[in-house]
Each structure stands twice: as C-alpha cells, then as structure tokens.
Image 1 (tube, one colour):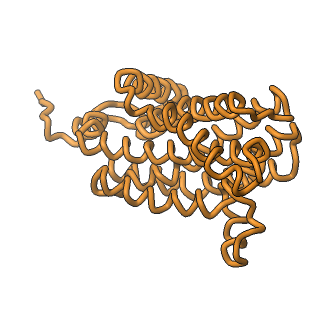
Image 2 (cartoon, helix red, strand yellow):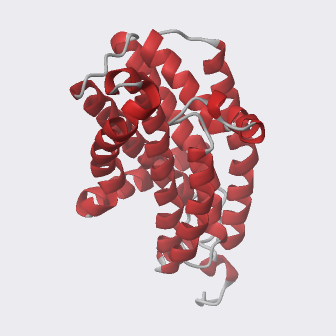
Image 3 (cartoon, helix red, strand yellow):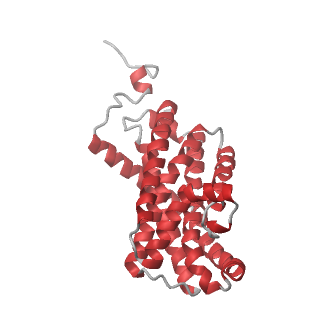
Length: 272
C-alpha cells in the first residue's frame, strides 16, 4: 500500500493545475470578490480614489486655473479629464503594491497548494480594481460639476469617458503589476512605481496644453499613452464625440496590454 507525503511534488504543487476555462472564470470572480471585501474592511486603501479626487480637483482648479486659462471656469474642461487620468494612474500604483504585499505575507504560498488556475490570483484583484477606477472617475466628475464644470457631452459623453478611464486604468495596471511581481518588497515597488507614474502624468497634456512645452518634451507628451487617453476623455466628456483620438487611446491601451500582460503572467507563473 502506497502513501502520500507532504514532500510529493503533486501535493506541493496543488495537484493537477490544468483548470478549465469555466473554473478559471469562477476562481477569478471569487478572488475578485475577496479583493473587494479587503477594500471594505480596510477603507484607508481607498483614500487614493476617494479623498484624493476631492482634494486634487479643488486644489488644481483654483491654483492653476487663473494662471493657465485666465479663470477657473475656462480651465475646468482641460483639468477635469486630466485629473481623471492622473487619479486613475495613481490608483494603478496601489495594484502592484498590494500584490507585492500579498506575496510577502505568504498569501500566494497558500494558493500554490490549491488546485486552482495559476492566473486567477493575479486576475481577480485586477478586476476588483475596476471598482476603484470607477469611484475615482465619478468622484472627479462630481467635484468638477460642483465647482462649475459643465460637460458638453452630457450623460452619455461622461459615461463613455468613465468607461474609457476604467479600461485605461486596467491596461496601465499591468505595468505596475509586473513591478509588484518582480519587486523585492512593497516599499521598493511603490518607489519604482512612483518614478514611472510622475513622468507619465506630468509629461502629458493632463494639466497644460502640450503646445507650451519645449519640442523634445512635446514630442514625448504627444505620444504618451496617458495623453492619448486624456485627449479621448476630453472629446467624450466635453463634446460627446467619438473621435479618432478615442480610437488611438484604445490602440494605446491594447498595446500596453499586449506588451506587459504576457510579461506579468510569465513572471507570475514563475513565482508560483
């Protein structure tokens, strides 16, 4: 009679890891729900998508509005979509930091011995973060409207802008997910992520028109994926128009996913 010990490879690896598509979807949804429960129980992790939009929208509008556009009301159609891009990108940083924290605390060591899809622990929290991007976008629009912003695109234009912001956040989060997998600790992941986030945000058209920038900076800002997304958000929210900029933003999001998603998944599977 044979016996199974805890040193058997199949036990340590969680057995047969070949999981069907339906099970993968179900397990991803379960882990997405786990991530939302963590958000509710630790509300401080939501400050970047709840408190930050309130502070940044009012602060940037009233500090820079007169200097850049002559008055606050003229600046709002420029800054509100820009702040949505900036806030969503900031929320993406938390994705990689939280992933690294879970890996450091041994959560993923438990997943290793479970017969679940190896991609589910990675995809679940990322889908849960769509809620964070939605909250950040809606709050930014709400504060903007409260201080005088009137989106010409109406409800449908704003709804389209919010959906685009959520998609952009999900695609850019793959960059910071890769940082979270490769980083040594959460502090290091946060430091590296901020070094990437600030150039992507400030070397874009989020806060000022790129026409005022020196030629080299303008060339970078014009092809910056964040600029493409913010321009498309402006077209949708301010004009209610599905322009070529929206198409380019979708192409940019697809390119980021095509590059960084396979890298993140491959690195994650090696860790698992």
